[in-house]
Length: 614
Ligand code: M6R
Image 1 (cartoon, helix red, strand yellow):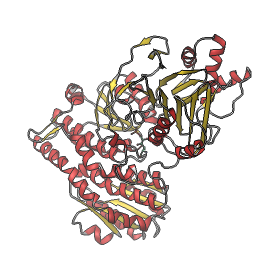
Image 2 (tube, helix red, strand yellow):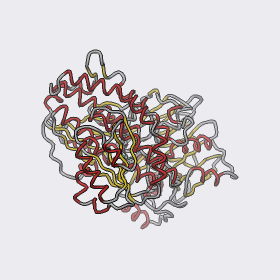
Image 3 (cartoon, protein in one colour):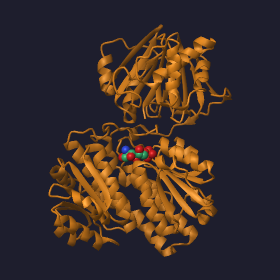
């Protein structure tokens, strides 16, 4: 959720932190701050707003110092303002701390500390934590590293923290539970720390991912030491970072979202490259091949996910049921985890997450695991918490997705789920080899079709111009296109703040039809296929009430063209692959509407890229 960056070394901390915070801003962007240490002087700068506002604030001040911590915030406790921004200081002003996550028992700790004279300036749980660490250190007289460990052993909740001590310019102390933290080990006794590897990438390829309930001491002279909250010593496991710098830069586009939309022909291809073998008609995925017996015997698949990933899960429901004849339930992870779900032998849980860090999805996985389910993960971020928490899985290989609105992750998720459904259908012999081979060939042609659809950009832009001032919008689809309607509506509302609803087209007459008048744009996925005639009837119903129809149709369609106010043509493909192709113009439309309305498409208000709080 929030972005964390820290530096310890012989260079200047400030430029590393500012650059790092800019890279991490997609994680949270309502306030930002840095604390820098030099010769016993602790400089603290923080403010409401973006990292650019922080830069303006710091501009004229002295900002040298070889140790520092920086933070970009997504508010949980307390409104976004200067005081609630991180870093937070201890009561004696010696410790500075940044935090990502939520300390659930902060209220009781705060009350206890207040009863002993601690005064709090902010509304945050983070300030409580730094006072608590100060308190433990004062009471026990132990070194800071030990005080952090002891304090955290009494804390409930999720955290990634970094602490510095005014009196010790040689040490950074970090810890994590349910929120990611990675340490980069540079040459020349330099250390970097961040909530993901993007700020570290240009300095070193050697990284250590902290595990849950680990506390790290980074010491200029003694190097890196890790212990668990239970005080067991751990050997740091140094891995090579595979991320490339180009992958996290805009590459000439105005926004990450636009870049990511245009990357889709490549990212879709990458998500099946090396997996489908057209010549032999087979799909090779180790997560299926190594557990074939489980997939063959599966009685039910439960899909857990949130947001766009949940929409990909809905597409997968249709795929698994049609291809592999396995009943599927698609659950919002946040609901699943708080129910008392019935998990039966033979259930397979598929968890879908772009970031691999979503707290609700992670909790749903843990619950399903406790109850004996076999868990398969579909994640984009390699090495992410969810990818490590699942029994097996498949990466989507879409490359880093920075724009808050998920685009290429969705199409890659559907592509991977498509291959899983086909592979399982083959294993269970529920589809003929001939059909599998034809669908594989069709999947192979999808990147070119997406390339074609991207050429409709100018038409989509014209449509966006016409409807950019709408207050509401309706999205309709049937069958495989129903999840696309939901996804189209989510894209529009999250980046342009226009209220939008997605519905199964036939469900419209049970309520939403009351909304239709001459002001209402209705986006309909009306491609030729199984439900085509039915969707045409739904379009007639909208037209009879003077609604405006913007239809996504199969190239060459004549019937819908006569009825609709605008059409966007997409190449013909199998019904089961339509979601990957038809979502593209809806992504473009949301992008253009948001830009025309002056919205920040990459960092829409109130949102963050990875939602690591429940
Ligand atoms: O990283 P995840 O896929 O687990 O994230 C789930 C949702 O938070 C995410 O898809 C969100 O809905 C996006 N902003 C949608 O564009």
